[in-house]
Structures are given as C-alpha cells and as structure tokens.
Image (spheres, chains in turn yellow, green, blue):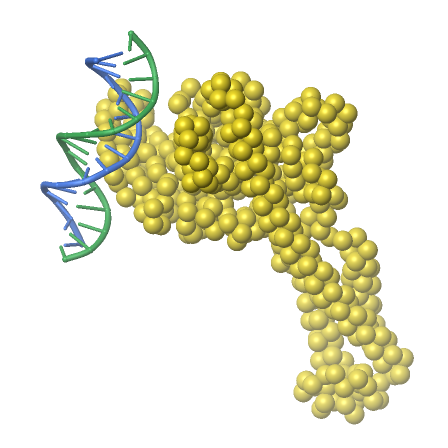
Length: 478
DNA sequence: CGCATTTGACCTGCGC
DNA sequence: GCGCAGGTCAAATGCG
C-alpha cells in the first residue's frame, strides 16, 4: 500500500511537472496563438485542484506514514511526536520521499512563477487595450477633422450609413497600423462596439466646443441620430404569463401608458429605476392575437451594476443589440444581413429568435412561448417555468451566439473592404477570419470555456469602462 | 410623507 | 399643412 501511494504521488508529480514545463515553454496568453488566458482564476482551477490534491495526499501521507525528511519543514504534531519512528524507516524510502517533496516544492515554485507570468500578461493586455482605445479616439478625431475640411456637399450626400463607414475606417486604420498586433486589433474591435460610439459622441462634443459652425451642428445632428440608433436597437421578449409584467430582476418605474392602435390592451412604458438616470426603458404590451402572451421590449444599456438575475437578460439584450447594430451597419445597403438570422438562431430552436427590419429600429424577438418544440424542451426540462430561470438558461447561449455572429459578420465585411482596397491582403484577412471562426467554434463547443471567456471579457471591459453596462460587463449583449 | 402610478397634455416623426 | 400614431412629460392621485 505504501508503495502504491508513493507511486501515485510520483505520477502526479511527474504529470504536473511535465505540464508545467510545457506551459512554461509555451506562453499561455498569446493573441497570435490560439490560447488565450482571460482570467487566471478560471485557468488555474484545474491545476490548482491538482496541486491541492497533491498537497492533500502529501499531508495524508505524512500523517499515516511518518518519515523524517531531515528538512524539519513540518511543524505538525505528527511530525514531531513520531520522529523516533521516522528514523527507524528504511533510508531508501526517506530518500524517495525527500525527492518527491523537493519535486513538489519545485512544482509549486513553477506554478507560482507561471501565475506571476500570467498576471503580467493580463496587465499587458489591459495596457494594450488602453493604448488601442487611445489610438482609436485619436483616429476618430482625425477623421472628423478631415471631414470638416472636406466638401459640404459630400457631407450632405451621406445618409445614416455614416456609422458603418466609420466602423470600417476605424477597423482598417487600426489594422494598417504596424505598431499594433493584427489580432489584438481584431480582439479590440470585437470587444465593445458601443465604446466606439462613445468615442464618436465624444468627438462631436469636442467639435462643438471648438467650432460652432453649421457643419459641426450637422455632424452633431447626424451623430445624435447615430446614438439614437444605438439607443433604439431593441430586444423583444415574448412570454406566456398572466401577470402584467415579467420579473427580470430590475426595478422599473412606470412613466406612461398608451392605447396602441389595433390592440385592445394598453401599452405600458417603464424606465429603469435602479440607477440614477439609467437610459434603459422597456415597453410591456399583451399580444392582440393571444392575450396570454406578454411582449416585453427592452431598449438601451444599463449604466449601473445589476443583480445577477437582471444581468442575464441585460447581457442578452446588450449582445443582441450589438449584433443588430454591427450587422445592419456593415451592410452596404443598410439592411441586416440574412445570415445573422441564421447564425443568431439558437441551437435548440430555430424559431426562438427572429429579427425584424420592418420596424423603425432593428428589433430582435425572443419567443419564449415555444418551449415545447425541438431540444428546447429538453433544455428547459426540470427548470421551473419562471422567466428568471428561463433567462438565466437562455442568456449565456444567446449572448454567446450573438457575439460570435456579430464578430464573424464584422470580420467578413472587414475582409471584403480590405480586399477591395489592398487586393493581396485579402488572403491574410481570410486566414484571420478562419482563425476567428475556428476560435468561435472552439468557444461555442465548450460551454465552460465560453462562459469563462465571456465572464473574463466582461470583467475586463467592465473594470476598464464602468459606464458600460454592468451587464456586459454586457454591453452589447451586458 | 414619500414614492409609485395614473392620465391628459404635449412633442415628434411620418404619410398624405 | 394637417392628421395620426407613438412616445414622453408632469401634475394629480393613490398607497403603504
């Protein structure tokens, strides 16, 4: 038994040491490679657990098999009281145990070093993120200055698609900057679309303070329309309930009620009252055709910290809104790409999520009334028929899907734009798209990993930009 | 008394 | 310009 136990420990040590060695030789966080560490806690769980297991085994081993290590490292009662017994053990066993203990110590040192290394990498990522953010702001300012110097007629011809061009220009400019890592730019671009709009808005404010011209006013008007579009992107949720309002974890204050045309039931207007001046609003109305169906439409992003139950739906709406906006704006004709619908559909129900372009503002509808078809019944099986639970279950999948689809669409359009401008660079971008697709597939294939990645990205963005949806932690998807 | 809800007035955008 | 519909505001009202 003793030999068996020591063998186990030895195997564990060898495995961990070899793993640590591999890890050391190949940095875990790399934008160019496929491994990306976003939160050291998540990625250490396995190793940590392993290490703890080793420690437990060691302690257990020492408690049961008192052996003098001659290092006098142990201060436990057993180690001192049984010293006489230890000295009577075979010297070979003492050597083995000593070696193993030393190996474990070495492993601990390696893990600590690795931990430190990863911390540094996370810091670097944060720093690069901040740098890119600054560069982006500068580019936006530069672009606005160029526009001001340009012809006014040209400006008049511009329509609401100004945003899409801005997005593409930003992406290309970032990509062409040799000082920035290619994939870092991509990661940055996909992180938070709403942040770009904040930059845009900030530029307008700066312009207004500097030049009070008709042109700047026109820019402001256009940007206000832009912001309005951002704000107006909506996510509609259909649920079957008898209550007048679904419970989504947020606090709402009713500020209006209207009779809508063609519907005997009034439409209620609610404003989020959890935070001061929170821009999020929602409309609640019963379906005219089926009065048991309650249609709740969310609009905007929270500017405050949300409780976990509210985070679920908020992150979903944020991600959906980001997807809607990125997808629709990247289209050359201003329409939402049809493949969004396909990619946005949940894996367990093709009819669960639908997009509407007929409405004044892009709206995605999540139909939670169809829970009896396909695999959704399996997914929801055993879960209480409570909206909060449904959201909790639904949200991560949706947010994940929306984020990946938005990212893919962004890059696909980006590729088209770059190819047309630079010709030969298309292949490079194409390979990157492949990489993104592969990464997306890997992420979507492993729920735990995707959850960890999303949580980490959310926490990183959230910590850097407290104004952005605490959901998002959801931006765009919170 | 403070807060939430109600409800009529008002604003805005759009189509004719 | 006018009317309609959707959305918002704010004073009045209700409730704990």
